[in-house]
Image (cartoon, rainbow, N blue to C red):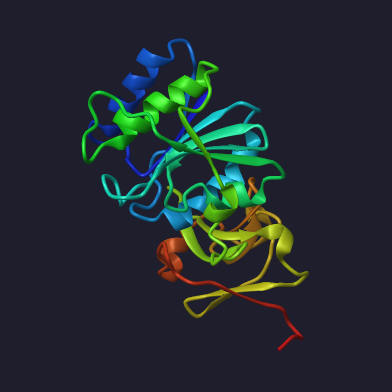
Length: 246
């Protein structure tokens, strides 16, 4: 399958135009929308979401990833093969965390260019045709690159900030729950949130943090919106405190 991972939104023509290219170039291959509402212009935050969610998909899935504020500029176009899955997108850090966490990875710079390449819509004109080729079983249309140079070594393994707010007002962070110490408290905008396993474990209207279904630390309010209740927005920093430790 081909999985869409973009900040395009569902309003306007962009997602539909890209899907049309996929149906034309890889007929019969299922196209699945994972995220269409990633925070715009934020490939760094999206990179941690991509790494958290990709593992749920079968081997040979092709992730078509477009969060590309530098479209048309000097950034390269990339194909990544990581732990048996394909990723296509701009070389702006969007693929870096998935690559870094993979046991096996290989990177290509895409040298192929279509006859028509707009300056501002590489999702449709470049990345979608490349994703379709991979879904058809063709090799990456480019040259092998050194993956280790693209892993963004200056970025942390886990990102202590808000990377996404869902339609219920639940707040995802770039932190993996497996790295949280027992009894850890998440601090954000003056609020201190203790851990709970799930919503019904706390009173209605109370805030808490929990491990979401894809392993990330998520902040929530039982039967409420955590973003509104605590004034949280994408990009806000979070701090993890452990009682009894300085």
